Length: 153
Length: 388
Image 1 (tube, rainbow over the protein chains, first blue to last red):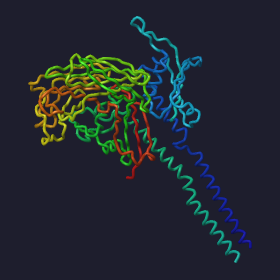
Image 2 (cartoon, chains in turn green, red):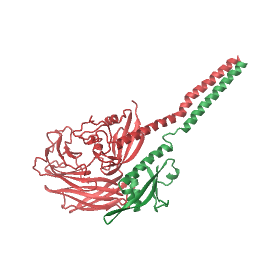
Image 3 (cartoon, each protein chain N blue to C red):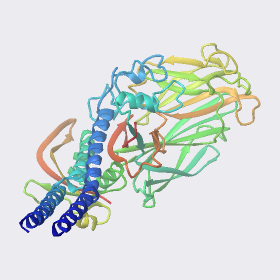
Image 4 (cartoon, rainbow over the protein chains, first blue to last red):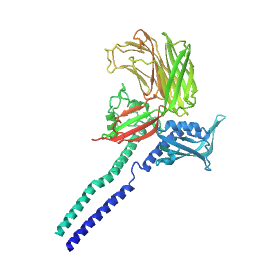
């Protein structure tokens, strides 16, 4: 009779051990960062956003659009340079944190930015814009901070 | 007896646990294993894409090397970045041209590129997508004025207002008249449409072609050409760095097809990315230096070096030939051919690599904005695993 009880205990131990293993594996799976998780998609979108802003800056267009307040041109430039399925929303601030763009710089459904799990936020700084006066250029230090949010539509 | 039952029950329970472990556990982890696999694929795709877009390759000017062979063994490392430009994501048009399958001056095929990138067990597909669309709605000539109407739209079809269009019209009349005129810019209306008029300088021309350079927000430019289409059997125009090279339309030349035989080059004009014109060449109808024969001889028909051509950033070449009329097949006359350079600088999507048909679910996609000949495009790389 004693031996039988030992046998039952072995079975119960095995069951418990199995549960522990299954639980541990499931827990590890929950913690695993998959490519479809926010982190990876957002990182990819961030790279894309930086790439586009850097390109526009290199061509001297981004400072011109921002400092001469050509908001429609920023929208058009971002729409032609970003892939078709990428939505964006940009806000321009001065150093005091005041919103400079009085017109929305965005494309896509606004709900996307509240419902989507994969939103990348890119911060890009501009220090000033050279203005030509009497064949000489003058550049005033007047920083702008651009916050570009992008998401897949 | 009880002990036997105990053992039977124990064996059954352990058996069930074993079966459960074998069936359930892989199911639980399969999705994550697949995800980890995709993660590795995504990392590989990012590295490959960076290598393609940021690296010049080896030799650094491999797209422009002389006498480029099919899958040229001199190419030691693959990369499309321009060696002349220090900015990121600026591609060399000569290297992109070496990916155009069927390029008469040879190209690197899909397997060779995979080998150079070390991707033998992977499939890849590269797409270069224009930033927007330009559609000619109409073109007509009245007297010495040409009228055109175009529509400019984003890739999803939404019209683009305030896009600027610059027109270059080339026309010929009779045996001698050849003229190029430019006009613009003309802005598109809220419907994305615009109409422009160009004075030709020639009344009622025999042939004309309109090339539009369309710019959106000064950032993206596209070139679109409208003209009477015909089967070009005269010559294929190729550019390698500073050299213009005309080749036979057949490789090897097919002499069973009625050839145009003696052809003279009368004019060659390049349009730069900023719209400037460069009259590269002017010839006569009797010279030897500008004559080639499409009915006999070599595959390479004519070539000429124009120092500074590559730095000029040409996007369109206009050729005026003295050849047999390709439409009627009779009589020698002026024939206009307009060519975008590189070929992908049109409004169509450039595709290269393996088929995406059955792999879309298993492939990862990465995208970047790139510049080719001062024009902005979206480059897209699809990568997937293939069984060895």
